[in-house]
Image 1 (cartoon, rainbow, N blue to C red):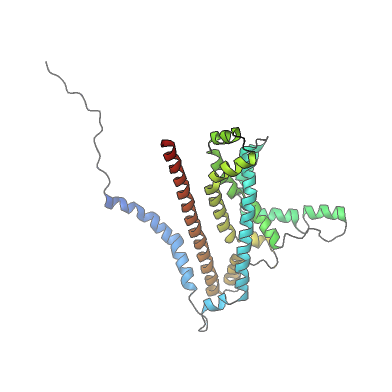
Image 2: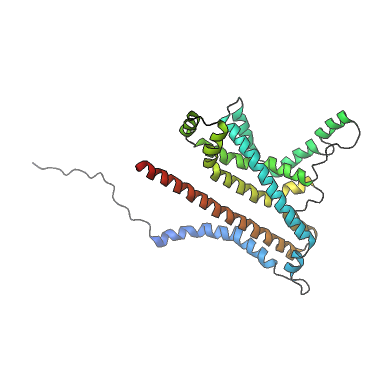
Length: 302
């Protein structure tokens, strides 16, 4: 009797893609990045080296009072707006995650909607509310009396900071909500059963787990506010000249392209330096958290 061999169920092995061929797949995205991002930045940096009348453009720009004032104002507005976004965003995220109330889902969707809007729409809404002829000033004028505007903060650095906090706070709320959603509920229950107050649970259990998300959101907001142009321009704040506005004035209004390139190069260097600081700080926080987790595992094994 003839015994038939059982058919093999294993799929035949396919030859893998050679390393030399796989490396070519990285060429198209690298070329896109070089053409779209790296080449324009290099052109800006090279344009900044051109001098006018034998004088260095860098020396004339860096020595100008307008540049130093714009640099200080940019950093001050960005730092203040970031601090406000961190405080307000953390409060909103904690309320939405741990304080159930009717309509919390709608509030979360509204926060997501703000992320999809351009920044100048927030400034336009502020103009209708807090402008000279806005609804708030009209209501205050009806109560106080008189024709002059009672609330005049929109066209000041305070108005710019308020508009930036309003627009960029969702960039802090979303990472925190994502971090709170993966927080083990058992940790909160154990801390509460041991008699810890809600404030202590928040300080000792919740916030240590949310530090990476808070750092990511805060760093993103700091970079965005540092390079924000639309809010400052549409606010039309008197005397609020930031580095992006100064670049626009030099390059578009006065056609001083080398001077605008110098300021843009400083802006690029400042943004890259902040990003490098964020990466170093994030790596240290992550390494510390991994080390603490490893120590917990070793103690449990003992």
